[in-house]
Image (cartoon, rainbow, N blue to C red; front, side, top):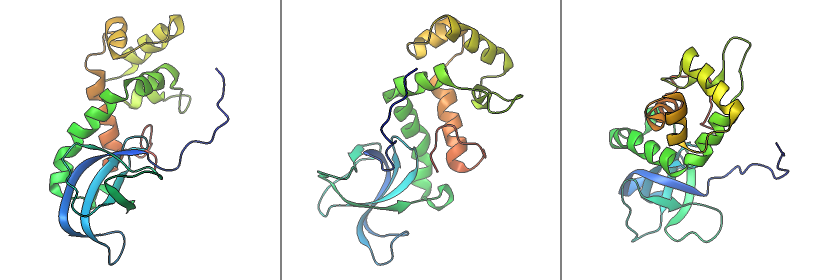
Length: 188
């Protein structure tokens, strides 16, 4: 496996809208007002507070560009949010939005399953994904030795693990809510 020499990005390029208030006040930056958006970053899966440009409209679940250059709908990324501080509406959208992130970035999550390693001599990273116990873990490890998984369907066919998207989504939600101490997918 070749190592890439580029540093991983510290900043998100894209985020998905969980909730927004057209005349809101920032909870992370004092005195900032306007279209306040609660979003989740596509790459690092962190909850973010974002300031929308005046007179732009947003939709729940919309993928928005928040990268450094050439933003069209976003003025600035205000800061990170804790799960407990986001609105009930944002919390209720979280599962669906995370599920679409996992589906839209299938290759990234399949690669994770193809390369996940033991965390300690007793616990493998794969076991921390809900629905994957010792039995599925062993099957996954055996099968990926023969040939890496190409997609979720391939995983399902060869190992029998039903609904991998659902299981990975569940794991990500546990990390976002702070239920789990170890982060496999969410960058703190």
